[in-house]
Image 1: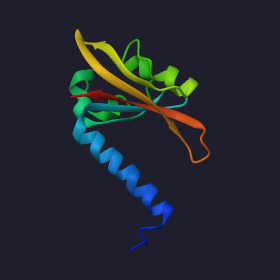
Image 2: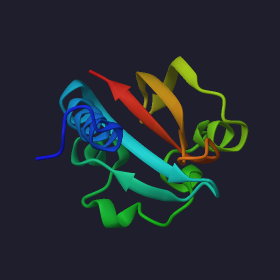
Image 3: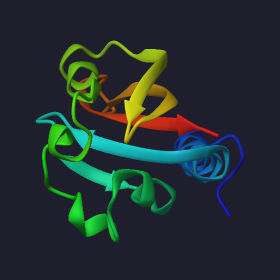
Length: 116
């Protein structure tokens, strides 16, 4: 087992923990690459999006999956939208959108989550 003081190990565990918590605490999560294409959607979000399987969203533009989404703006600007109300399927949702950065701090995409 790596030493607890190993920064790379701690960073990797932090990311795993973040995604585990995101899955438990959020009603849905979706991620895009810098070009606005969906690269991840969790199972909880599928029904709200009218999808049966994540493969129906992967590779499509975020606007095809969530019309009027602001995810592309976050991926392009690197500025998070920490608390917002989004309408989807006639329902008002509380959402958060955060940029995803690589190890150099370059924005490579965005992740959005829907609160419970």
